[in-house]
Length: 238
Image (cartoon, rainbow, N blue to C red; front, side, top):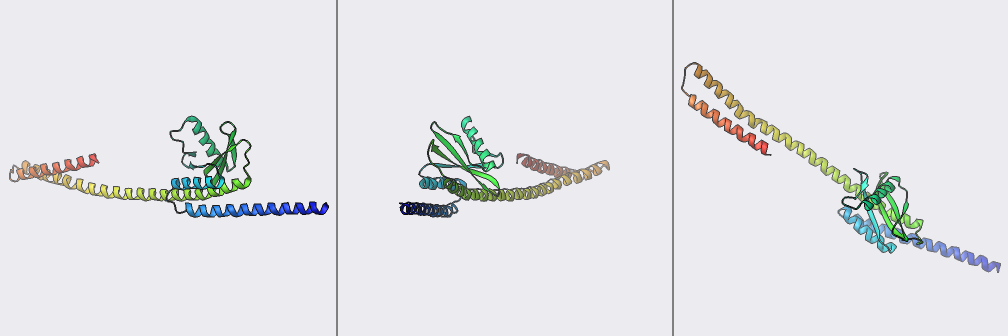
């Protein structure tokens, strides 16, 4: 009896170990394949959708990912009902703390929130709705957090690229503005100089009683004034 009891215990432990090893291999294969798939996608929105489908296939239940916006430290809450906004505020708090949390969901269920971070900052959370007594293990948390970690890297990459594009656009805009200002400055000065020069010569000839060329001077003053007015109109219409 003692031998059978000991043998049975050893067999149970071996089977338990084998089961854990099999679960570990399954999780590792899932995460590796998911990482390779997500890395090829062009945007975080596509990556979140694909990750949600992969996670649903793996866990057999819907999984949702929410990104946390760094500017306002809030997730995607525009146009949502107040109750949804309140929940998204909780998502932001969980992401900031880095600690898994659970909240009451619909009657008879609970909502589990698993945060993921990149560079030490909460970037997104994964949510899964569980029945009141449904089993969800630490290993499940680890798999979902690892998948979220892959998404977090994609989020950071996209935000970094967007920041770089914005800086490049701002620099280009500043350069174009300077070129435009230099050009406008030159174009404004040229007719202004003509107006001043020909009006000065006209006044000088008029003071000396000379009428020769006065008509030509006033014509050039008028043309320069029209040109200056056109430039100012173009500038104001920009």
